[in-house]
Length: 440
Image (cartoon, rainbow, N blue to C red; front, side):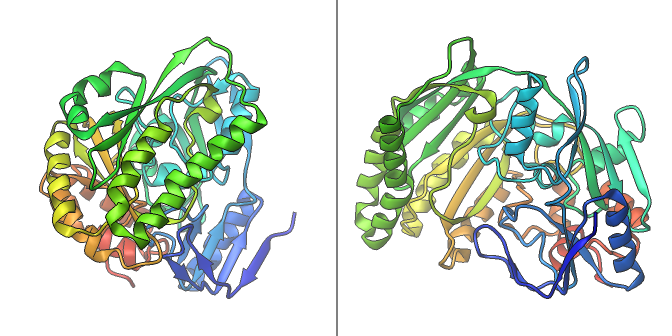
């Protein structure tokens, strides 16, 4: 098949907050075409960034040189049913991946709440779901292949070149173009997913219980209120819930009212934010659904937003949430989006935000079409007091000196990056600041 490419087009991320106009964008369909594009950019002395679904809120994909999209390099290449492992092309969207796995009687043991990301982009940024017993998506990686700056293809696995695997699993696209990922899967399963209303005070008192009592647990706290929605999931053999057309329509209407309509109402009349949060928690609470694994985790986005997230040592969660409550009241910003709290287990991938520690992840959204710097800055400062690590795909301004202290293998990653890409083909200004590297 011929390589499809475009010249000088505008690109924007999902939230519309990162925009660029790369001179060239390639859409390869074979590994040889990926190699050729990498070599062309290298020989021309340009830079190249791989672009996925655009769901990163940070400028990871920004470039004015070359984009390489893997939107035509998708699908599962092989399945090992005995070991429950699959090789998938990195451009495969999570939704397509989980649908294909289900046809083989397999599933991911855990997944994030957004399924339009590519598997390559999701692992590269440490994207995660929730569940104290589970790591982020990169923890499922047992092998990978990447095209390096010199055009060569390197492979890594748990048995061969484990250092490259641990660095490449969460690489921010800085080591090369990850083309294939081998994932450890499990037998397909169902979850009973339930929601309940609670107060913030009650939730803070029960944090340890909430984290351990269910297979998956998370909660949404509406700022400026005492209102929380708890969401939990456990494995079941019950039959899947079947909603009628009317039930589905009514539920979609409630979700739209909660996550879009109420947000806009509170934005126009900030004083009603407290009432909106309390009403929203009551409307969503009480649901109980039995869902197949491929659809149990997903939450549909009803409007666009910008987002900050940090992974804290789990024992600091209660203290930080109480401090956030005081901070929100002091800021009086009246951002109505609920704060999401999830739990993630440890892994061994060098740049994973959950490297070798149990984590509580706090996600703070803001309106995408207004300035969010003054809102996010004091929140980030608070998180950093507790050794919080930034989610690579979210808004953050962390630089190499800060990150060296937070990531024990940070310098090992930088050394490997210099070895694989000495001229900085895969860097951009954001990554150069994050890794403390000059832009040549």
